[in-house]
View (cartoon, rainbow, N blue to C red):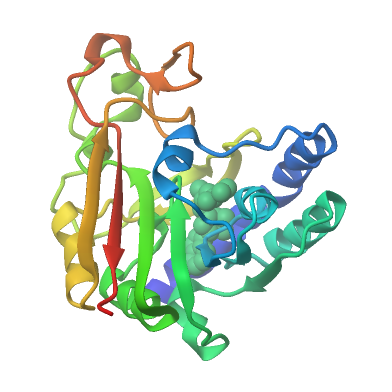
Length: 265
Ligand SMILES: C[S@@+](CC[C@H](N)C(=O)[O-])C[C@H]1O[C@@H](n2cnc3c(N)ncnc32)[C@H](O)[C@@H]1O
């Protein structure tokens, strides 16, 4: 099967969650309670006045949060329903945000502005089949000297059986070097319950992630591995700071990573 088939299935799968995510974030906005992943918040740096592109923005909660903090921001997601919800949420939050419905890999066909910062976080790269093409899109849309920031599941942890991990056991289910996508019948709603919908996920290795950057002259300037993450990205137990971990494995393995790469000046 070609990648278009997988991407179409993923688009349909994510669309099944749009309304539930919308309702979840609508309540948070009404209660003035939108927050950002605390790891991302501590690493992103000052975004005030910066021109920012947010890739795979879902229904736009983080996009809106960053607009409230002063970014001049555009969010992109493949699911039209997500983008419609994101526009309504931005209106209710009374912030000025632009949203674009597009597959990231086809974004250059509809959008060619350049940005100071491109961000993509919290369960993103595995939905993109070709990270070299992804890097080309990112590099084209960055200003010279601009940065891309990624925060995502750690490729090493993505090899393990999720159910076994919850019991502190390490069973390899998704081989590290396997280039074919994993098929799943459920799509995980991180702001809602899961839905039954076939979807495909590429558990990219670090080699593939770094190649995607370096082949497009995006030079690594920051790299960090984290032992705890936000719930929804791994872990079975929450700590006092709201971060999640596996008690039997705590501090022994990296759950998520962050990086920044820069386009030459
Ligand atoms: C786990 S969510 C990312 C979380 C998101 N950063 C947030 O702040 O809520 C993954 C998102 O990627 C989007 N997506 C999947 N494949 C995509 C693609 N090829 N191009 C653009 N967006 C895509 C999905 O629609 C979904 O909203």
